[in-house]
Length: 268
Image (tube, rainbow, N blue to C red; front, side, top):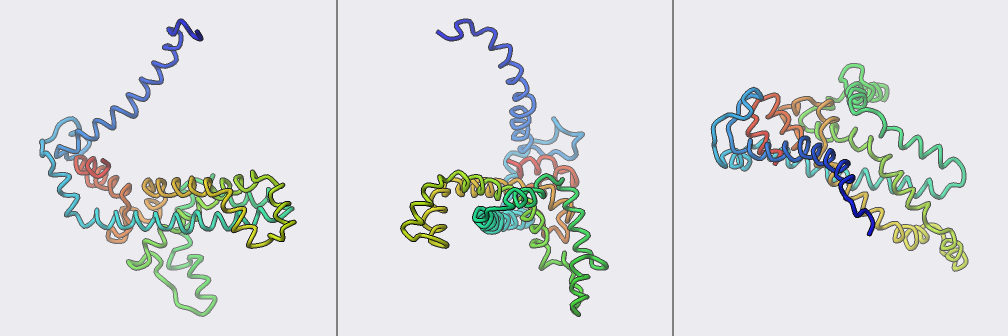
């Protein structure tokens, strides 16, 4: 029997379990406990007044939670239709060319490796009312400047850099899936007269559908965790808290408003 003496294995397993316990399971359990207390400020952690389910009841009447949830659902839709949709279109186009595929793979993936802070600051410059790139283009075309982070446009402008950054991530996954399709299939299809859009609809897409589903799952789960880019582009949910997502609102309540108990309830 392999590994009759399992004691040496414990030497490797125990440290990993300790790390998981200290940095994952304990904070998770502690966070659930905190959600039942009224804790004002991080200095009061471990104390506070027990309030039962009051923090959870506030979730149903807090308009900012409703706005944050709506924005998160918007982000899910943007991620599915734009991130994955654009990535799929780009992957299909690049897969159809014989030269330069590696160049496009690098160019489209490049935004993924740029830090969220740098991207957020870059888009802030684009959105600037005086001298921003977008408004300079409008002025050069004889049009009026636009306040890009106004109440009506803010959620779309905050979502734009998130969409832009991760299109390349899904592009690489989908292109890898397309490259994995055996060329024999396309050769047989060519003999039957299947080319162009028919080849895409009846061969390429069905054969990479499992890859597409993985991308959709990643896009949906990723939209639930969005935090850094929106916070850099529109700190504190500006304007008027209209650009908060669940992650940014939880951070705002916990670390800015110092409502640790309520922030814990939001995160749960």
